[in-house]
Amino acid sequence: MVVDARRNLPDYDGGERLLRLVEATLPPAQEAGLASPRLTPADVLLAQRMAYGVVVTAAGEPTSVRETVDRALSLIHA
Image 1 (cartoon, rainbow, N blue to C red):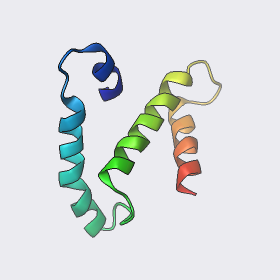
Image 2 (tube, rainbow, N blue to C red):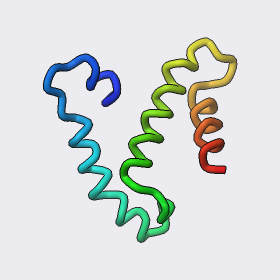
Image 3 (cartoon, rainbow, N blue to C red):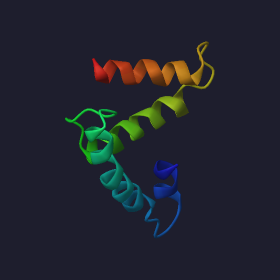
């Protein structure tokens, strides 16, 4: 994932590439009603980082990782 690679690989530009990808695909998703018009590319990347944090800290929890991520994202969407 971008978060780990950014820390471990010298000259890693995946974060910039991911930002460009989100910048290109978010507006069409918003126009199609698939993403909130309030979202910015920075918001999407922040949510990705937050979900990553939930995933790496969810090991050993009784619920599935997917359920844990869904719950965390629902809290920020409320």
